[in-house]
Image 1 (cartoon, rainbow, N blue to C red):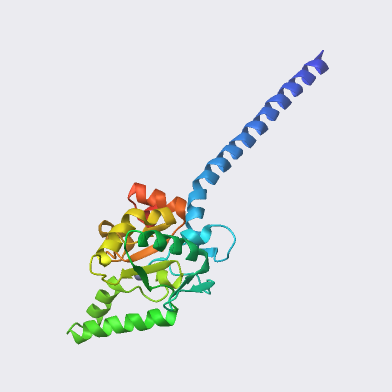
Image 2 (cartoon, rainbow, N blue to C red):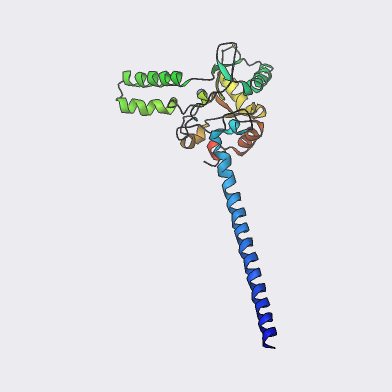
Length: 236
Ligand SMILES: [Zn+2]
């Protein structure tokens, strides 16, 4: 009698213990799931490591004054007719965009594409010099220059994914017409107006109607429709 009771008690204790282990395991699993969901977007926006050709991470690589270009980033380049060059992966989209713009009697051309660190540095030095020659102190000159020229290592032009687009005045149309057309159509080809007028606080760069950045068609359309800038899109 006593023995049987003990056995039953032991069995009941084992059952409770078993249920407890299951509950703890389920809890750990649940927490892990929540944490995973939590960290996925952060990982997606921190794709700075992906410099290679595999995957789409390169399209959304964020480079600004707070996020310098990954060290050793060296895109494969394609040279344009005027000597400027861009990342080979965006060349066909750029070409397609320009071809369609030409059907609207526009003659866009790339003023600036890929830049090396050295070129970016000399642009910065020149801009600072210009302000100093206008009578500004070096500190002020530097601060003002940085509104217009990215600090070397923080320019999208060093990615090869950004282009400054201009146009020769052809009598009937001007650069402003090109920029207007690009503002409305560039997303179809995967490009965004990178520094909108109402986002300068977030981008850290003054309004640049000529600067377009390739981010891929999907992201470009989303950014265009939502009226956000790349930093907002990536949750930074
Ligand atoms: Zn630019």
